[in-house]
Length: 491
Image (cartoon, rainbow, N blue to C red; front, side, top):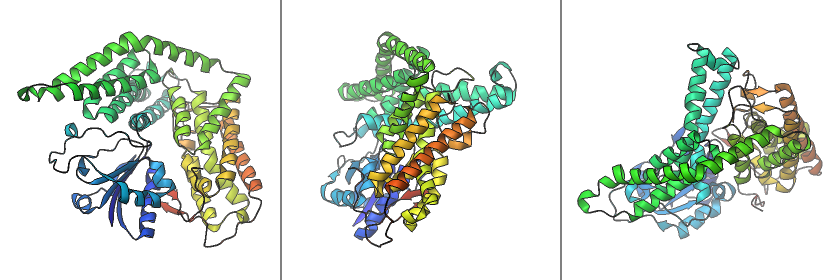
């Protein structure tokens, strides 16, 4: 059997490569030939050729973002959430070979996105995938803009934008005036693209820009993306013109009508309520103090750790990113600070545990702990997944408690963050983090709590047997595991 696959996650950092490694290991165990194309944050790697696709018996797409399937017309295709490839790739391959359906029409020769109707009805797909697609395209704009703004403060202080013609003002213009300005249109545009393909981009981006100009903010842009996408999809299916005028639909009629409807809805229906919601959220977050802020920190921390950057963790991360959109120059978000700090704790805590008490971890886990240090300081929560997969009943509670402690401490210390990613590498940038030493202390305490609880719960010495243990490897610098374990992390 010959299999081709594509893996893609919302950030394109960890899950993309973990799923690819898991599929490759499972195929090897089953004695099948496989080639996996990864669509990560640095672009497409190991790209599938036309010959690869032609010779394949089945195509597997494991993704939380929308993947263009035009290349696979007439092939047997199975599209699933990326978690299925990470957690049980062997079963996924076997199921795909038995149940995959023909994609599109085998006699279709024109592989254009206009002729490829969006697929629906798949388990694990739908609105969440559309949201993930928008976020995956938005994150680089947010990270780049945030770091450039922080650098502008480093060179010109909080009022860098006022010093026209200086390097600091130019950095601020690129970061705040351009990258951040594109953030909401990109989010809405690619949500709509995921729903309706290319016809959704124009109304989506227009709706996202309107969300920014009318003050509806992050949540208004989400609504704009879904509105534009489903309006464009409906019009695409409904508009019928004589054959001589069909060429006007994609370039004139469809973008014009969908943009008009989306724009009017944003101005007259969506704008004011979401502007009020955005204002309320900003005022509420700014007014948090004492017990209320600590409780919010505990909730955010627990969410970041409970599924190691899965859907629950992503929800907490989106909340943190949303808190950045209403900031003025020089301001930082206490919510984003708690979010990033908590997300760093699970891999750092497990790395610390393997360092403190090696006898309770296998040699493979000890090696995995060395890589978890790097992933943890880089804010890649997925670095703890191998440990959680091998021993969920001990590792997940340890991680949740440690992350909740860090979230609470970060909020208590009033630590703030101006950028949505970067781990410890953004800490030295002036203006990027407020109360930086207390912030580092909160992360360190949470990691120690996770390590101590994990060690205490692992009361027995690990037997280094060949059966039933976890085999950790490295692919593209990411941790992965062999499915020989009897544990199923989904339970």
